[in-house]
Length: 193
Image (cartoon, rainbow, N blue to C red; front, side, top):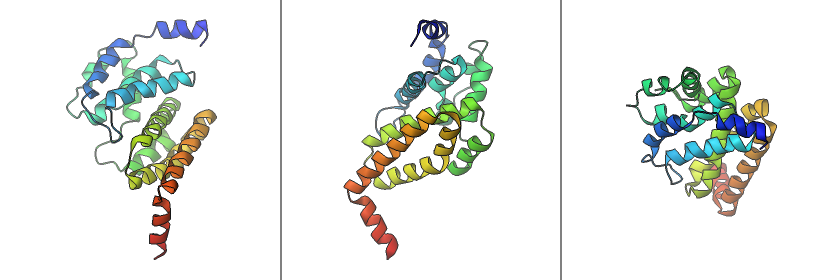
């Protein structure tokens, strides 16, 4: 990171967004850990890829709050700073709506998502794919890999080729795990019968 990027980051008013994200500390993830850590990990992935857009980073820290904490008041976001409206709008873009199918949610991001929403979704999925290394449910891993190939690859190809390459590597490694564990062989044999 160069000095200019560091100075931009230094000027980002992030602490209130991090405080909001702490409501996710008790929310467990399928892979273990909690949702708060996932928010911070997603922000770290964006930084790793050189993103220093303040709205994007703020949204990354709270991107799952509205979806995962139904009683959360969006006013807490909207009152923070001069960018909070943009942050809220971005969070809503990457929030699955009540009753919305996961496939429709991801198609909505592909077809109508802003550039920021697509970048955030890619960083979110990279974090989720890394966490699959701790998941022991083969059907969940396979479903997640298929979903990543079908919906997230096109988004990543559009917004960041390096993220696309990382996602390919993550899918290959998770599928290798499934193959090594014998799950893919059993699934292929079952589908033939």
